[in-house]
Amino acid sequence: MKSFSKMLDDKYMGSVKVGPKGQIVIPKEARDMFGIEPGDTLLLLADKERGIAIPQKKDYDQLFKNLFSLEHGIPEEK
Image (cartoon, rainbow, N blue to C red; front, top):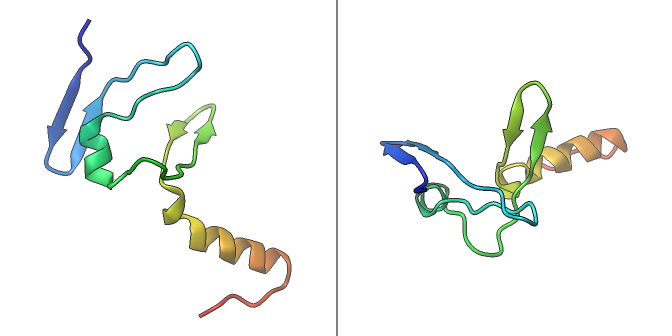
């Protein structure tokens, strides 16, 4: 069975299959769209009601740094 994929301008929709070890392959079109390279770290965010999101870690690094700074009373960098 062939997987489904469709790309429209800045949108992509595709199907992926979960392998026996729980792994998925991010389709090339989606990797190209987001500049995902081998070795990149992605986050897996999951909410039972809203689903799963897989953003790139680098997009959240500053947010996490600021959150942890506030939690420990460390002034955030400018």
